[in-house]
Length: 216
Ligand SMILES: NC(=O)c1ccc[n+]([C@@H]2O[C@H](COP(=O)([O-])OP(=O)(O)OC[C@H]3O[C@@H](n4cnc5c(N)ncnc54)[C@H](OP(=O)(O)O)[C@@H]3O)[C@@H](O)[C@H]2O)c1
Image 1 (cartoon, rainbow, N blue to C red):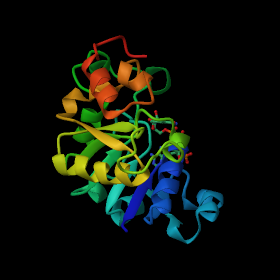
Image 2 (image 1 turned 180 degrees about the horizontal axis):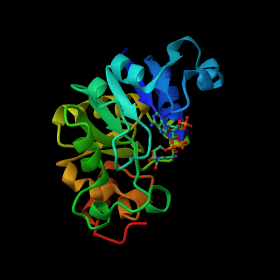
Image 3 (image 1 turned 180 degrees about the vertical axis):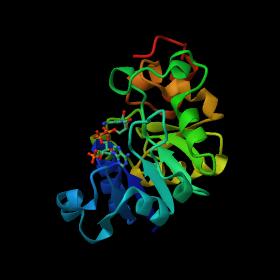
Image 4 (image 1 turned 90 degrees about the vertical axis):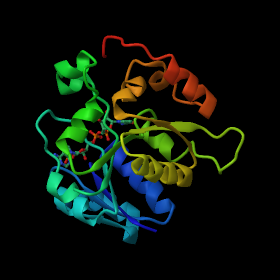
């Protein structure tokens, strides 16, 4: 059992929290409006969950999930996240986030930008190509023939291993993507992102089919 800090308590953050609690972890959850606004959610989760500030979530987590859209100016607690594995679920959506020219041009991926904003953390992109509620319902036991696979992208093998353990506990296999510069292969508009259900072989095949397209 470990403590998972979760910054962002919306669709993704709350479903990762529920899955983590089901697997015996403790979670500390933060949003932008303050811990007092999370009392209903914490009430549903019970004693394994606490509402905190983003800084407190970063400090308390053995591993920290960021389930918040990326901003060009860092708004995450970089000092408190230093030295930690940071799982980033962000998908860049220009219609929602505004245009990031270096991402639109494929010069950098959105997760390389997050890594630059958190230079002393080990960022890993994960949980980005599954609709959040399915984190709780699509998992299968290890070795099940119809087990699905999810991607994890990072420059840090140890960060990928942390996600591999979590995916396995939640009921999914892992396909590793390295380096992070290759993480564009699992971005909105790409085959591996559009097709949600993949075996390991199907996910690898769809990642190989990725081609630069105009970002949605
Ligand atoms: N929804 C999905 O199924 C899904 C699947 C894969 C990936 N993603 C990606 O994952 C990210 C999160 O998506 P979501 O659907 O979970 O979004 P969401 O439901 O809108 O939740 C976003 C959460 O982030 C919090 N937040 C925003 N800015 C913050 C800050 N500076 N500090 C702390 N918390 C902050 C919000 O808090 P407040 O409400 O208090 O502002 C809210 O709890 C997005 O990039 C999305 O594209 C989503």
